[in-house]
Image (cartoon, rainbow, N blue to C red):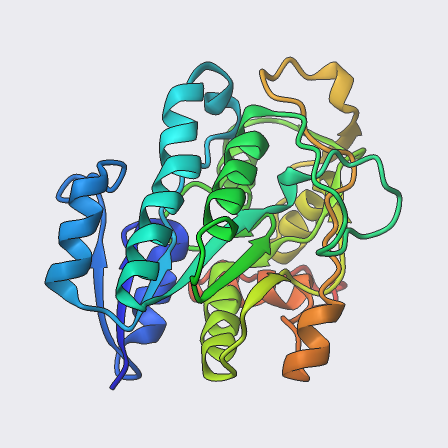
Length: 291
């Protein structure tokens, strides 16, 4: 049975990976506070102790606004840590799977972004994740799979779906930006796809996100519909919000490359949302709603 080491195993994506790996792999996890993987010696000892065949790095600092005031932490977790793991994996002949983000792009392109489009991040989070990409790709003789994904939601961490449901229970109305579009992606769908990629021994850079795209406003509207919330949702624009970090207007990822190789892609985002809400017993669409 293949041995996996999943770093960031307590996070939203890491916990999904751990759950789906059970019974299929000899999987172990590592996360704070037991393991500070930004210390290269800790990362090295962990690789020696666990002796994995594959490391899946789901550790990340994902607070986009927090990264603006916490650049040092963002660069340590999102930039340096992947490099430490990459070097350690290369030295030991271990495969590395690492995750990056749609936010490495500036959002100016009107069409979906492909893997060979030039990154140009507009916030510190995107800069730090791009630094992590480069740190992985620059290591010689490393067998790696680099996966860019987008707009993650799932159990085990802060996400847009849970936030909207919580706000709808407390506020008379919601205002959500309608000038940013992307691909809401369920962590469990992404985890399944990663294991498919491992089975196919994929290498290099791939985009993996839900099929279809939507704005944050459209996403919020669908959440309200699927949970039978009566709280009205109104569209607004990014320039009316005072947030520390800029967001790309378009961060839709093309998954054509992945589909051509695997013959299958991630499910459509509305289906993913429905399944997530079903798992929480919150899927209660109004009678005239369509799933």
